[in-house]
Length: 217
Image 1 (cartoon, rainbow, N blue to C red):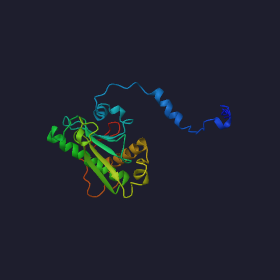
Image 2 (cartoon, rainbow, N blue to C red):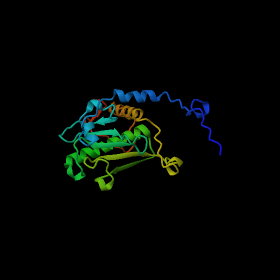
Image 3 (cartoon, rainbow, N blue to C red):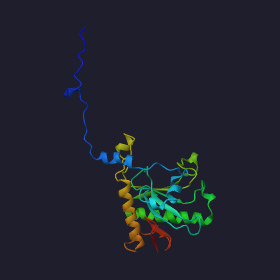
């Protein structure tokens, strides 16, 4: 039996194929620039509420002032979306169950859900919206200690072969680009320009702030 010929590792046939992806270098260099992670509260929603200066990297679209105490909240993008534009709504105070909040806090939460629904309609014009709350780990809550509301924009035909065959969801927009679209819609609404979608109530004046804590009256 003849000895098997060992190819020259430097020959073209033995070389590993190369895929040029120069845009990844910028991404890789961000690891060296990133600060050491700080100890958090265990709820990224609570951490985002306590750090308004990080509304940009946290993809916060809108925050409301904490007036009365405990009634302030956030609208932000889900970092792991089911569909492009998937929003999360939460109060800054972390409670595991809806009825753990005071009645005025619950009212503030639903006003913020109204606001998020309006922003989604203005920004994306979806054909439908899934709204839902997962209360408790058994119900599928990712952070069961901090109740939050999901809003997922939907379109007819938005489930295709990638989901059915490949079991992969395709998100067609970056989080940063989507956040800017939502913030622009929030700014337009605050300025009173552009028609509101019919049947969608607005939050009372003086209760909304945009990216960076700017208050809209």
